[in-house]
Length: 104
Image (cartoon, rainbow, N blue to C red; front, side, top):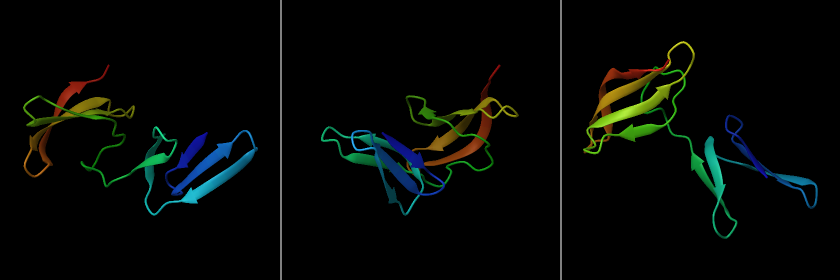
């Protein structure tokens, strides 16, 4: 069983069979972890925010043409909105934020 301390830049692994805990420090904040087919740990590191000024960023999605990006929610109780952006597929840069939908 593994646990991530993103802010602490640490991954802890508990081994039930031996009742021991191991940990590894990471250079960057860890966003997610998984095991591959061989049982080795795969980490996804956190990157700087793609869009500034959001409270709680969740998933990303694009329209099929790739030119509209949706930030699947700024789900903090004070916002609760799905943001949409014009998206430049060549540069990877979002621009012109607008409300794509409001959450109930």
